[in-house]
Image (cartoon, rainbow, N blue to C red):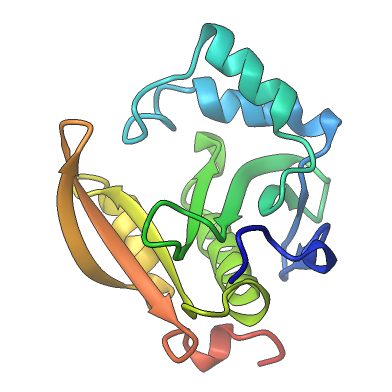
Length: 183
């Protein structure tokens, strides 16, 4: 894959039964900022972001390639963030990451959003290395269960930021047929 994403891939919106994943808009920044400052959300992500780092993220997050606001179709409220990074630091493999506001945990939104993002990444974004990876702390059982539920398998473990991390991976054949678009 080239060093930059293809311009014809963005912006894009992805739909599921209950969610719309769309590029982050200025009106979404308050909800996205809550994700970055909530201690519960950031428990396995290095803790809350504050000060200048938070302000920089808030200024730079709108319209970024692969950064999706996760929006409920019923009332258009932003419940989370999913990102697809085709140039991740993991041997240039495409990485998916996700965060949901705690009041929306346990509703299946994370799983639904990750399936949509991974499907899009595998169908449209990856090329030379047709797989998607996700990294989480080994202690983050909820995240690990989510990744396993969409067909990802653990391929590596390592220590980073003083914590045991695990890497999961999926390729085009790994996403269960019932989760592929059009199935």
